Length: 271
View 1 (cartoon, rainbow, N blue to C red):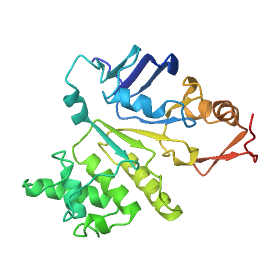
View 2 (cartoon, rainbow, N blue to C red):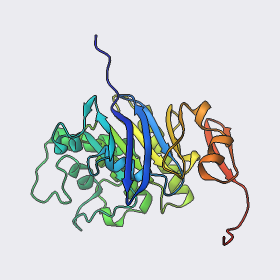
View 3 (cartoon, helix red, strand yellow):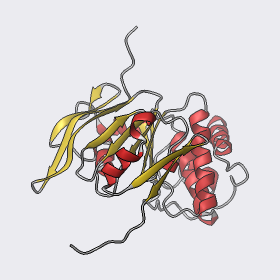
């Protein structure tokens, strides 16, 4: 039986803009069904890698592969049907009369309104099932615009899952969440990781404490857009690696299955 290719693979990816290296020879992969993470400081190229992975940007040199197929050799629209992205930075202008259930169902058609679509009982049951997985089963009939920020993020998680993607990308999804909402969201992500028949999951974040418990494939970028470390948690999640990546003394601690980062005190000084 042929070996299953990784769902996502970067092969010596380099991106140059105005003579400056944004990404420097990135080689890394996420296995099918795996849970991975990309971490690094601001400006390290995390968002740029995501744009390459989803066909919105092409590397200067190197290649990106999805399920073993090189990007650029098959329609981008087909790629995007198989990849779901959830991010806090994008404000999706859903129609004002949409409920939480409507928003989840909208993931089936890739639209910001469901006014012209009719979903089968099987589809709405599937939406309700996923809403229960993310803790929104008591809010299905509530107007999406009246949900809290944390509840909206969980609705977007459910929206991303309903189309059976092969890869779910969670891009800095805790931005703007208060502490209880963040913890609720992280618990939801862990529940998704534990669910049967889930897609591969890729978390992009600055913060070690946001890694799901089942994260086994980690890429840590440094401020120069290169790889500081790549591999499993025992190799990557160390104080030495993070201090080098962020150019700042950082202590990484591990307790109760969760990593935490503590930066040394200090203040910015003009050069």
